[in-house]
Image 1 (spheres, helix red, strand yellow):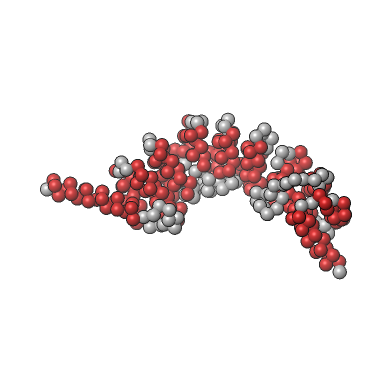
Image 2 (cartoon, rainbow, N blue to C red):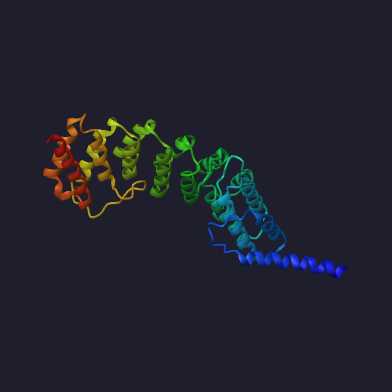
Amino acid sequence: MWKKLTNYFNKEKVDNRELIDSIDDNDTSYDNIEVVNELKQFIGTSSDVRKVKKAYLILGNIGRNRYLPELTNYFIEKAASEQNPEIKSYIYIAITWQKKTIEVNIKPLFDLLKKYRQGKIVDPIIDCLANSDNPDVEDALIYVIENYKSDWSIIQANVALHTAGTRKCIPFLAKKLNESSEDLSGSAFLALIRHADNREQDLFIEQLINGKNKHSAMEGIYMHCGPKAIQAVIERIKKKTATMRKTDCNGFFYPNDNDITLGLKFLDRYKKENDDIQKFFDFLSSKRIDKLFVNEIKVLNEIQSKTTANIT
């Protein structure tokens, strides 16, 4: 009898290993929910680190394709209790892939963020909090922004807020716009723009005039501002085209545009109601054309051609 029982349990372990081996952990479309319990059982009993890591990746793919909050909670509980740092890193990968919905309990992760400050411990946690519509996640990321000293940890929180924030995070991000680190202030500004609307237009205008990240401010103006920003945009383009530039950077939200082309497109919206705009376009065409890059000339010419066509 004992031999039969031993053989039975050994067979069960072999079957679990065969299940792990039969699934490609790189198959991002894998969603067979029927194997979840088997994989959990395998994780709970196996000492094979390589296969346990693979099991977490397989479960992670199932969860992101099925949106299973109970599975996300399982990952979070495991992340809080797992002692092997190599396995823990794979659990965080699986959590990153999950949508953190309102049903997900992130308290164990939030508690870790409050308890520790070391980057090797907290940075993977911050990173895996993206992709959320859970207000507790936003609160955790705001906590990092408000209480951490590490620029990199705060930058990660700013990035996570792109897909985990709401308007609630805007005032906390705004506090970071004048930080000495351009990466820190810039990441905060981009997250702020993501959740802003026309209520922030004064902030964008001020940042375009006096801020550190003027190219991002132009994106904010293009996305959220009205005629109130016209003069600031004209002055920004005038200043940039006053001298020759060797290069320029494109936008984050509009990767095919820089702040001049976005500014031109913004002004084009309001040229029928503001005579200064057409005068400014004419000024660029006649006085500053040699200071414009090819893509900027193309946008300006398209605007001018459209104006000519409308007149005729």
